Image (cartoon, rainbow, N blue to C red; front, side):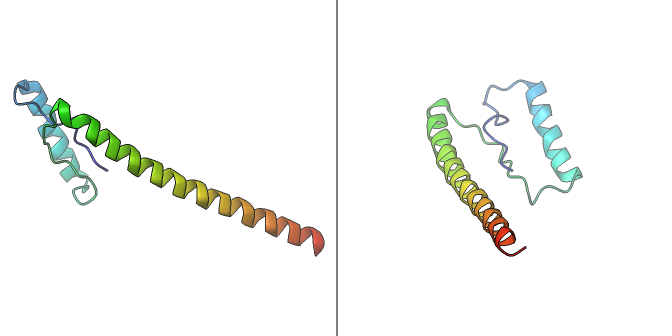
Length: 89
């Protein structure tokens, strides 16, 4: 899991926001998720956000195509098994 652009703090962040980020860090450690969660706590300036979302959408579309192919393969496999069962009861 990647947590960053929502929680990355601006240099002018309020203390309550800084406290919340510290709380999230502690929870990640408390639940033993440090190896599974990327949380760099880096502030991304507004100018970088379109590039971040573009990269995310590229990756997401690739993953969704892969999932679609896996689902299609599973459906076809089930159909082939059904056809085989009908022909050879």
